[in-house]
Amino acid sequence: MSTNLLAGKRGVIFGALDDKSIAWKVAERCVEEGATITLTNAPVALRMGGIQELGKKLNAEVIPADATSEEDLEKLFGESQEVLGGKIDFVLHAIGMSLNVRKKREYTDLKYEWMQKTLDISAISFHKVMQQLYKMDAMSEWGSIVALSYIAAQRTFPDYSEMAESKALLESFARSFGYHFAEKKVRVNTISQSPTVTTAGSGIKGFQEFFDYADKMSPLGNASAEACADYCVTMFSDLTRMVTMQNLYHDGGFSNMGMSPKLLEE
Ligand code: NAI
Image (cartoon, rainbow, N blue to C red; front, side):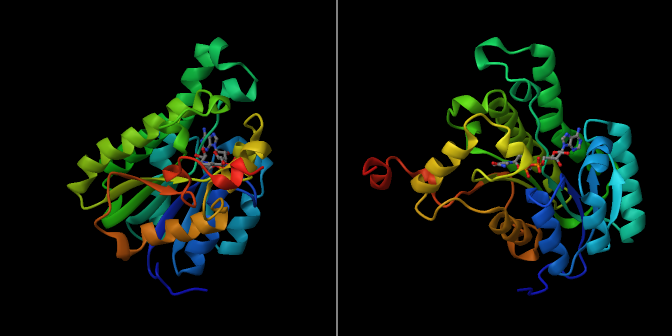
């Protein structure tokens, strides 16, 4: 159901790889709510995934950019402003990748070269995105920037490995840059999402078991990618103008649970 919450707004959405991606659902919802958008992903992902198909469906230009490259980001935001016809009202950062997790290195035996790449892709890219937008003065007043995070930033989930540190850094960047962006009346937040079945999510060891556990632990159950898209729409809309520098849990209540009788009964 559309209520035209984003009518006339211009957005840039990072991270739609395939139709399971959270960013894919966010892109669909934003357009349904009246926004015009550009889609972006790393050049290699553009070749592998179905983003072109999404672009066609949503009438959205697909612009390749490696989010770790300042040069690519400058080009992306320049082109996006041209295509969309003005400054950008909202940006979604939905990027995550761990080399050590992908290559199955234990947390007690991490390869630091890979860790640095992981931090660059999953967290520092968020700073790079914001710094580029800030320097280019590319955001509209009352614009909104959101990145997706996970509760392993606060609590220990052993198999999440170095992604825990990536998310802690990501959330810290939202607070620190949120302060500076407030001068331009732009807000910055992270949304801490439930485990969700996607390419990035399923790469974590024991993901399905953990997904089921979290579903039982959360009084409302796990939040779906579609529900996350709804929440992102509200964060991009004018109804949340004074929310900034926050990490917002979107997890069916998981983050405030201590123990669940449902799980004990099993
Ligand atoms: P996904 O695998 O569909 O999306 C991850 C995206 O990151 C892909 O589109 C990938 O191409 C992109 N990416 C990787 N390296 C890049 C680079 N150098 N430049 C530009 N893009 C790059 O998976 P998902 O789950 O939709 O991930 C989106 C975000 O949501 C990530 O930040 C993830 O950590 C976060 N998240 C996911 C949860 C889950 O359980 N799936 C739970 C909480 C947060």
